[in-house]
Image (tube, rainbow, N blue to C red; front, side, top):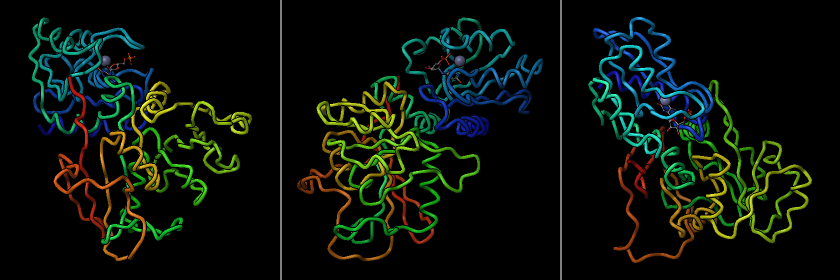
Length: 349
Ligand code: AOF
Ligand code: ZN
């Protein structure tokens, strides 16, 4: 249990850097001592098991491997980890979650067992599924895992009408958002936010942090070509007949799709496995109405605004039909409260 927590912490170092591959961590333990650990740093690089085995050297013989994802059995950009573990003389493998990649899908575990290794599956599975939600979504559904983030006042408002910025939540909440930006592949905003705020959407104050790829949802392609986001490699998502010639001339990657599900699939083909939705009520409502929000992370700030914009403008449902979140967490963050929960099931095998 304790060692799988270490493996998950290793895997976390790859969050936001491995797409379309999963973040994976591995810890090798012999006689109660960690003799090697590693994580998958990026697609095309060696897998977590390889780094852990390298560090352990001869000490891997007879060891137990704790891996956050089932070891692979296929030749992809790198050779099978299953073979590497067997060749190194590892005796026991503890796996957090099976790999939904059809090229692996239980065969890694079966192969290890066939070679005489003892295999345990499902240790800290929930944590692993959460960490791998992006990869699991991309490989099974062909589109990114969508996390909707917003901050609202105690009376449920995100802004006064027609107002742009104006921070709702505290510094502690903003720090948490920066941590998420560092961990998710891409960050989505609507054309309204670009026009009103001209935001940067970068990761600030996270040591070693990297910026998510901005994605601008703009059906009319009317967003100012001078906006800051384009200089950060933002993708423009627009409709098939919108005139995006100015953006194209400026070298912007333009995706054209009639519907939001198609737009997400197009983002998936660019290798985007997770998307942080930081747009305003319009974008959030559109995603929610199409059933495309997988996870919600909402801050509630202890202040009152009065008549203003709600996070959602989607038509109201009767209370008994309100959409419930699952696996809900509640956390105090400075003066604010962070509530998270899932609207979709994380794809598993
Ligand atoms: C593991 N350990 O650390 C990772 C795994 O193209 P490749 O060779 O990198 O293979 C990518 C696939 O391997 C990916 O889709 C997923 O199924 C698995 N990722 N497996 O044993 C790792 N990153
Ligand atoms: Zn592998």
